[in-house]
Amino acid sequence: MIALQSLLTLSAVLFVIGVCGFITRRNVLIMFMSVELMLNAANLAMLAFARHNASMDPQVVAMFVMALAAAEVAVGLAIIVAVFRRRGTVNIDDLRNLKW
Image 1 (cartoon, rainbow, N blue to C red):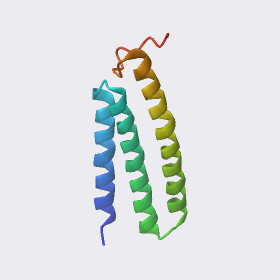
Image 2: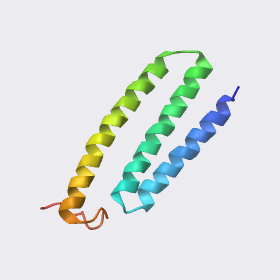
Image 3: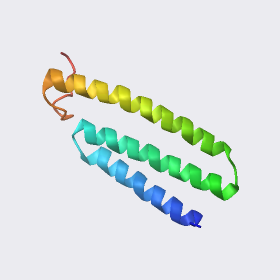
Image 4: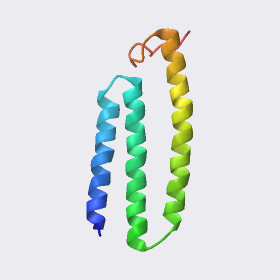
C-alpha cells in the first residue's frame, strides 16, 4: 500500500515538470504535452485523496477529466497539424501573429 504523502509528492513533481515544460519550451507540441502532464498530475492528487478518504466520487470526476483531456488532444492536435501545414513550423515565437 502506497502512502498518501508519496502519491502527493509524485503528483507535485509531475505538476512542476509540466509547468517547467510549458514555461521553458517554445514548441507548441511540447507545451501541449506539458498541459496534459499537469492534468494527469491533478488527477493523481485527486485520486490519492479519494483513496485516502475511501470515496468513489473523485474517481468518477477523474474519468470525466480524462475524457475531456482526450477530446482536447483530438481538437488540439488537429489545430496544430493545420497550423503546421499552413506555416511549416510549430515554434510559438513564429506563430505570435496568427494572420493567415
